[in-house]
Image 1 (cartoon, helix red, strand yellow):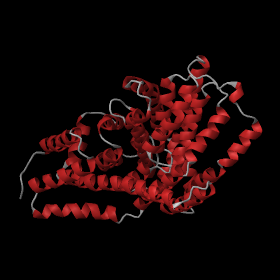
Image 2 (image 1 turned 180 degrees about the horizontal axis):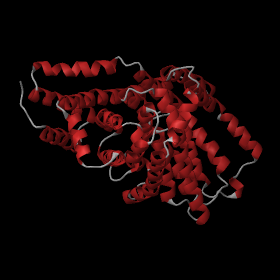
Image 3 (image 1 turned 180 degrees about the vertical axis):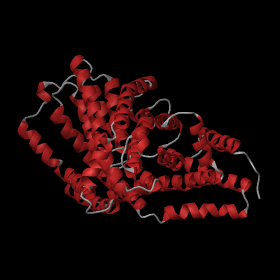
Image 4 (image 1 turned 135 degrees about the horizontal axis):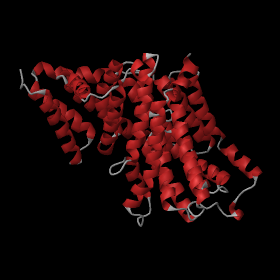
Length: 451
């Protein structure tokens, strides 16, 4: 038998060394997996190493996860086919005459983009390249311009088909379809809050978001013609989400339909060639491999921690705080936001959800005023997704901030990018609180669909 270490010390050593290595800039996938193997070797015997294949194999053979590469591929195809540029162009010309209209157009385009993509980086970078120069050229306040790009970009986590939702559902053993449907209203609500904020601010102070000059505006007939250009990708989104919501197809089958549809859309836009397909394949390979490796590593890490009694330790520690169920839930949310400043989303999901979900289940649905235990996991899942959105915007390490830094003009200081995120971070907090206080926001639509 290996060493005997108290669980308090083990928690400190395991998570301490994890943070230290991540700070050193090593990739999360190999840090979690590598550390787990080291600890397995120290704590256990040869038998304990069996945990490695036994944790990884169920993930390798998990049917739900095959939706991930398909959705990433669909997004990559649409991006390569230039759909995203066209879409911004359309929404931009339709809304340009409104005060703050371009910022609203950016958020709206990001919302539609989120329904096609499900990955954050793509949306922020693309919008940063297309929308930011357009807004700055028209005299928009840089903070409103950048804030709306980052806030809109984070919607990809929430609005289906979100990759994060698929992984959460697999880890929490929940239906992917239900989680998708539960996230729709909170996603649209946040999108609405962002748009309201930029438009109201621009109406109060038109210098922040001036409307585009009259000579650049277009006629109604022209607007309708432009919307016609967008019909193919929009139909694709409606079909993909429609088959999931009506229950005709599972999310994996829907992803297959979406991928096939992306080929057709690319063909309609005359962009279907070998170069486009190979680029999309490489993007998909890189992104999926990263996600899956992080899952492998983190699942062994958490598996070992739970095996050593970590689950019970966390549960007892939370109970010892003397907080009620709501206190524990709020504490979890705060922990997630703090972790979100340091770790990436797949990592947080795999480190926290396996430990948090059983605790939430143990507290029971009644504790939060919910009637059905199934609603409880769904509700917590969507709260988790909204929370992860916040982690993308929260300084100092929010991913969205750095994605934007990569494409923003050099003369804009990092401090301005931080400041531009704060009002939107506050709006996300408002959204999170609404979802916590009114679980119906999340549970109403899945009930309607699944009865």
